[in-house]
Length: 116
Length: 114
Image 1 (cartoon, rainbow over the protein chains, first blue to last red):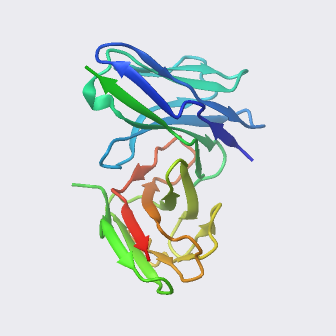
Image 2: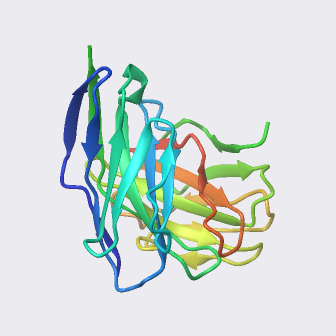
Image 3: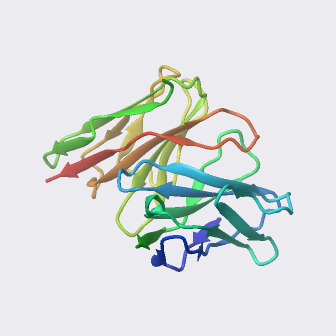
């Protein structure tokens, strides 16, 4: 079974600074997808960024980028120029490539605080 | 506007009662999912459905039941057999297929059982 581990329960970053959230996963499959979701205080889950395992290039979305290390099974999220609105819970998630409706396996989350 | 609605936002029930959580989507998605979220834990899959009249158990299906009579609707019933029903419940949907479609989430329902 796949597992996703987020070893940082809480992180803090100053506004305008950069922070990196860690995620490791365990799988025996070679093709899969990885996601970072954001859950603000409203508790609405919002997709931040996605990565296909077969792509070597790291995904980027504006201020958000990932460092995908397939051999190490690591998938960290970097947030640049942090803003107060970035404060939220961040969840790393894994999805198998096969299967038409495949479940997401989530980590336990990292709570990010953004300070002035 | 397209999206997923869950109602109500907060739900209170007495122990021993069954309760049904609503999930409706107008995104024309084939697949729908129910997750449970507890403090300090990530989301865990309860049930999912790929098409109408079909659904599969997730990781923590015991004490829950679902139906999928319409493409737009995927209600979740929390039965009295569920030992710890108090939690935050999230519904999600996605297009069906092998492309890396994201799952779109509803706003959630907070269920409190006393």
